[in-house]
Amino acid sequence: MSAIADGLFTSVSGRPRLVGARCDGCGAVTFPTQDLCPRCGSDGMITLHLAERGRLWTWTTQTYRPKSPPYAGSGSDPFVPFALGYVELPDGVLVETRLVVDEGEEPRIGAEMELCLVPFPLGGDADDGDVVTTFAFRPVEENR
Ligand SMILES: [Zn+2]
Image (cartoon, rainbow, N blue to C red; front, side, top):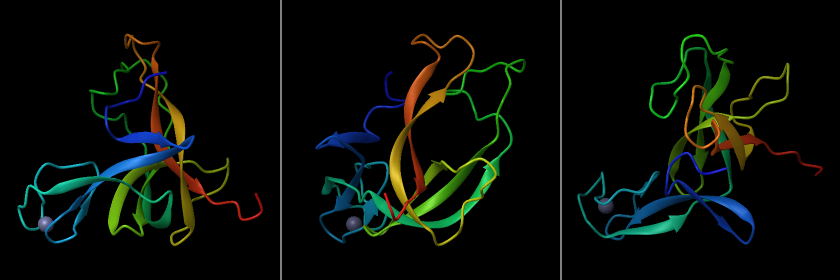
């Protein structure tokens, strides 16, 4: 499977990591990476691998079909609602992300979440097999 977009995440020592950027001047952190700092306008943005864990800040349920692209499904495809949230990372950035929760469970605001990679069905006839990889956050299981 290919990634849903270039440069959003990578693998470090076999574990997925989001790729963000930190401003050399004021320390602001962005995700995804940006060429210019949104806070001070500096072009001294340094790529960094964001923390694997953060806290759930808020969430909602995506009950409608995402915009195309990247979602290419037609109106006749079954669309399964999914949880969408913001996870606050210790790097000082909020990440908009899909959430992985067990059936019948709901995400809990304030819960510790960890990064994972999940298949993302594009629907329709996307050219690389209809499924790409995207990132998501899931609740940390303390006893794992
Ligand atoms: Zn800055």
